[in-house]
Length: 139
Image (cartoon, rainbow, N blue to C red; front, side):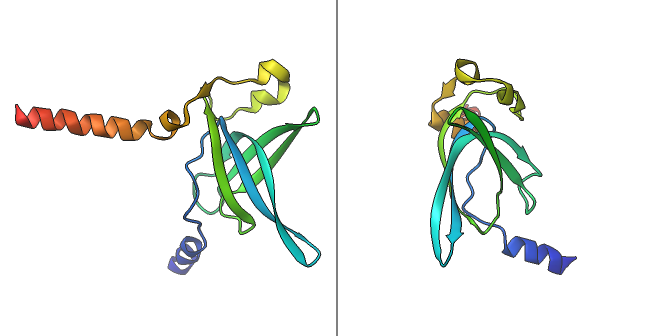
């Protein structure tokens, strides 16, 4: 079992951003055409994250292309994925945004949140807790 765990740890990517449902992302994937290789971007909203953060972890990205909804499921640790860029964050109250499949136009629009607030709310909580413990120890 140790060899299996070691193999999985060796093949995990380190540069994966912390994704959440409602984030707008651009996924650059390596595409091979004949003997050439190029990067193809897929930009859309993350509607689901499944299977945790380990080797089998996947995320689903949805976009509207020419009035037709297109969804792709990407494995986090696939060797074909070059990079994942987080573009913006929407305020959502669900982990899975499958309800967006039935919505078109303004009904599918989500309220945007400033990206810095979306990424680092835990850091602000940690710093405020540290300040309160310092004040308590000083008193």
